[in-house]
Figure 1 (cartoon, rainbow, N blue to C red):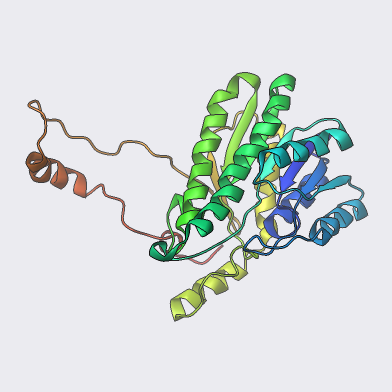
Figure 2: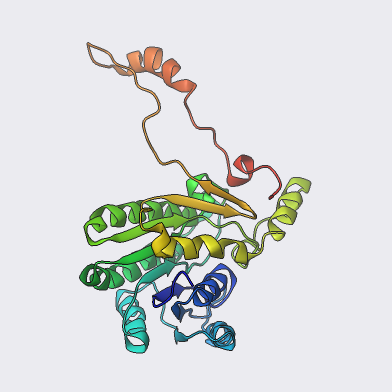
Length: 302
């Protein structure tokens, strides 16, 4: 019962990874606010049924849960989500920013609407809900944020400029929260999940290589990500903040973060020609290749 006495908000917890995290947190002793608008994968429509199903599972197992169906993409709604935790359980200790949608499109065809829709839910939503909870975390001098990022942002992927930008933006947001709120004993970390869920079911499976990739992903249920989320939310992780983790089947990864890898110096300064002649050859071996997540994680899940 690592989360005994704590109250957790899990956005997008009507299904998939969010649901499994909510169930695991309830099983670990937390009271859970299930936030989900019940929209389609592209963010359209609204249905309270998914959230009600998650709540029913938690209560069948003896846990406590409340439902909120507001969209995270608006500031006033984010305050309502946090207020739901306060109204039902009197406090808030954990925020898991999991809510998300997809509007995949090759970059040169992506519309402003497709860009903004994804940024609003993933990045703005993570800021809004975190910011709404931050006041309470600061006053009680404790709290934990777990932000769901993605290897699409950390590494790269085709046709996901909006999603990738949002997910990498969340990493910077998490680091800023970790730095700014350390004085209040508030922690902030990122989790990049690997799982076959509604969010990954749109991955292309046309070529033999793509089909093999999808088959490997389908072996990984969304529940594989829940133990790490529970750990990061618990007091057992009190010294862990500003980090990026990934669970993959039975593997756990700690991701590096941007740091200088090479340097060159010119006493007389630089010209464009001098950069081409001296700096470029010195830097070339340190260039990061244009890889996608599937290129980096190319082996079968174990």
